[in-house]
Amino acid sequence: MMIENLSLEELKAKFNNDKKFKLGTYIVGGLLTAVLLFFVYRQMIWVPANEKSNDGWWVAMNYISKDSTDQAIKVLVPFVNSNDGKTGGEIGQYLLATQYMKKGDYRNAIKNLEGVSIDDSYISVFSIGLQGDCYSDMKKYDKALTFYTDAADAQDNELTTPMYLFKAGLVAEKLKKNEDAAGFYTRIRDDYPTYASQNGIEKYIARVSTK
Image 1 (tube, helix red, strand yellow):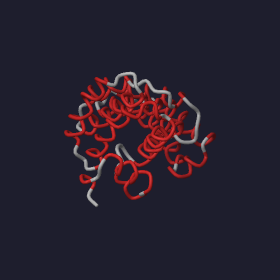
Image 2: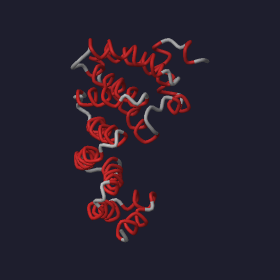
Image 3: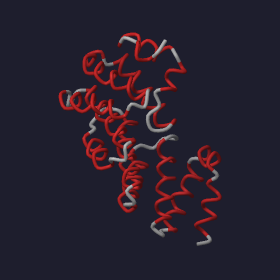
Image 4: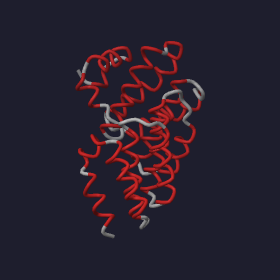
């Protein structure tokens, strides 16, 4: 069955039951999107009061899953404007920011990320971290470093904290702040050994130590 032939209710059911379909809706990388999709599922189950606003961004998700970035933006802009402050509207604004990022429109991405206000710790952290990604891609490494460290410290967990410490280390190296970079990498090694072993943190520590 083609995605474009699915009704809204069928789309929801397919998302909940079909793992391959979930994988097809990735937005900004595997790890980030897996968390976002979990959050999406949770909202559909636990926040029925916002069902109408949630329905709106499901339409956009259909386009996002097909990499129809321009069409997703076309749907999301009026939806976000008319649902500001509602759960669905805030999710829509987050999704809108990711689509602007895909187009390289970092200023609009940052503007929307700044406006995301939602009672979910992971989405809040990612909204901070993605601003760091925008500034990094704009080669504004000082600002990127600030947002990465803020994201790392926003909530201590095994997922986002080491990921953003690692990004902070990389931009610190670009800024020739090798001592700071070593500190970020060492913190990962000492406090998040699983992430450290998966990403070969020791070689990064060695690299900045010889500079």
